[in-house]
Amino acid sequence: MRFPKISRSLRQLTTHVLAIALGVVLMVSTLQVLPSQAEPAPTVTVDTSKLIVQRQSPATAAISSTSFVTAAVNRVGTAVVRIDTERTITRRVDPFSEDPFFRRFFGDGFSQQMPPEQQLRGLGSGFIIDKSGLVMTNAHVVDKADKVTVRLKDGRTFEGKVQGIDEVTDLAVVKINAGNDLPVAPLGSSSNVQVGDWAIAVGNPLGFDNTVTLGIVSTLKRSSAQVGISDKRLDFIQTDAAINPGNSGGPLLNGQGEVIGINTAIRPDAMGIGFAIPIDKAKAIAAQLQRDGKVAHPYLGVQMLTLTPDLAKQNNTDPNSPIQIPEINGVFVMRVVPNSPAASAGIRRGDVILQVDGKAITSAEQLQNVVEDSRLGQVLQLKVQRGNQTQQLSVRTAELQNAS
Image (cartoon, rainbow, N blue to C red; front, side):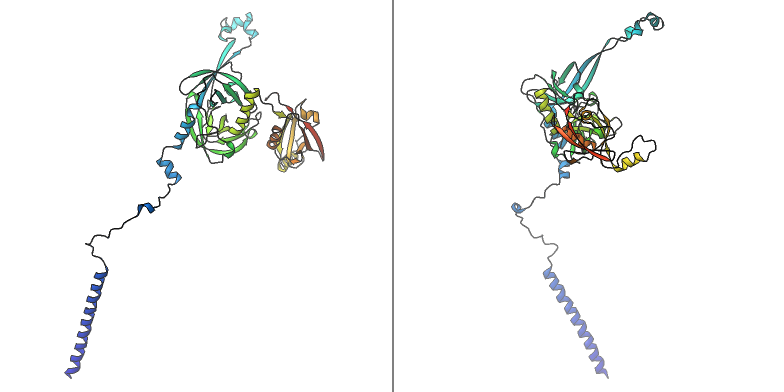
């Protein structure tokens, strides 16, 4: 009876011994595979010639490097000038001020308080486009000025002579005699400008010389009619770079320091919106001003409005409307200027211009551009809707004599 118990105990003892032995073997194997924590890490040799350098992102580069605005302004800054103007106006003498009865009540000194002549001073900006001393600016900066003074950034001042003015595009060219070693602003191309590009305005706003403001291009081809300047023929670059009185005529730069526009217009009711003349247009006008002193602009002689079916329907449903308008797309003639090409061709108030030389016209801006791009004396074939009928009229363009 004792032998089975001994056999069972031996079997249990043997099982424990085998388990302990197996555990010892596994531990020894692990120690052979894993390196000791006390041992130094193996040395790794790296071939630096084969390393690939990660390219820095534009945002990181802009933060870590010198400001691109600084580089752009340094490239053009010395070519930006301040333009001071003087103009003398003569007041008409009021006959009442010389009347003895009038002077009894207001005194003899009343008429002496109102001088017959008064000097008006103006301030603007410009930039040098040629080493010979040609300066580009806005027409309204130097128009009707008796004296023009151009001040360079280094403090030198020169008398400027206006070589040509074009009121329609608000551009002017001024000449200074300062030798042939003047800094010149690098001119870019406005055709390459895109919405969202950097826009840097340089000039003398409010008399604060050498002021720089930064923004972006908000939109392109903003027509002068949309801006509220009906007497101009321009498609502006719109920007949110701060433009204030005194900036007029100064350059609008891209991120590379090239001139892409000329700061020109400010809406008094706008917050953070300014407008610039595209440099491609300005270069073409400047060349004509240097050569001829003026620019000839063809015109038809109509005041017009872009017509849509919805706009016509609103008019036609108004019981007080004096005229019924065809509910179509085109250009509605609001007024015909007397003795104009349009009047001579038989265009009437209330006509709707549908086509010019076989090309559909759907907006007033489009028609204006077609006329502006035509030649003086060119005959344009107009398809016109008059009431329920269409007519073909021939209009010969003439030169616009006065922008106003």
